[in-house]
Length: 477
Ligand code: 4AD
Ligand code: MG
Image (cartoon, rainbow, N blue to C red; front, side):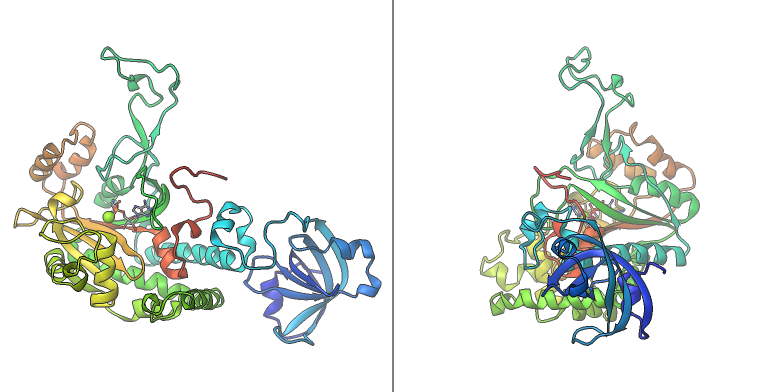
């Protein structure tokens, strides 16, 4: 007998005399019907127990959460809801589960409760569907770049540089916290630290990826990034995964084309390959929306939203145009925004991004040419001397999902910029070398992976799309 997954068994349209499956009990009804799930699919296989010929002691151990090894005959189902089911001939309890204390009961649990039980939450339909989609999206990303001539580059996780210049880094040290070595000025002497200098967890692999773009041409990173920003929002994590393509000889227009094609491609992939999970999440979101007041409900279902992105062009709008739209918008005039937009130069908040996408343009938007002083040091300065070749992609329900730019490739201008921002040239000597030896136009962007998973699954809290979320005051598991 060959062990099969629930997914394989459910796709059979013939009866099979002898099958074998292992999984966890979701429910056990009437001492007769086991709903068994093994994670291979959203669906359970119904296993019909011959209770007259099964010992009382085994029947008692078939409880929600228990792990079973079942053998039997795969037959056409007598009941509704499934095509096939197993007539059980033998049951082995591989692992018992105490029904009194097992946290995942066969009923609706709040997402807050499930976050506290993140080690068991993938035993539920919603979280198993979300995590299967997360896996698929990740595959689709590698597939896209592989098919388009990109090399996968592993950027370092331990680094001395702050790519974004925002100072939101986690320090990595093995100095004795109680008794660190001090220098002559009485400050901690990082020369004596493990790496002989201050070291942090990376906030972005971009600067290192640029070095590879300027030799291998088209590269991308896909790895964990860390930010010690104390923003307890539904869209921020302290540890998140980022995809960062970087391409030599590509300008900002090319960067926008790449980002749009890439986003459409990975979303199309899951529309084609994760239908079952998407339909489940679509219904989940629909039920959740029904509990909201009419005015706050989305007028599209999850699958409609995904199709909408794949089938429509992203609207490309300059920052300056966006500010005009926002300044003249109803919520701005009626002071409904928390941050009122008065002047050119203002940083956009998520409420403004979402207004542009959800109320004004009603489609994904690429904003470009931002004021230089609200963006990172490495972005290419425009001829006007005050804007840079930056681009952010804004998605409905999410706000900023991608941030990118054409990079400053002119050594003198980059040096001036770094000086103005107090960025140490000696720290980034290698980054400046790229501008000394064969510099060229190049561009790239960063996609926040969890924000993409949120969009594709319709989950509204970023903590529910990563296995074990790290947020301020929380690093359980
Ligand atoms: O806009 P960001 O900060 O851009 C960069 O890091 C560039 N180095 C990218 C590049 O050009 N190669 O971050 C990129 C994206 C954001 O658009 C957002 O989707 C996500 O990363 N992101 C976060 N996601 C979750 N939690 C956080 N704290 C995030 N910060 C940024
Ligand atoms: Mg950004």
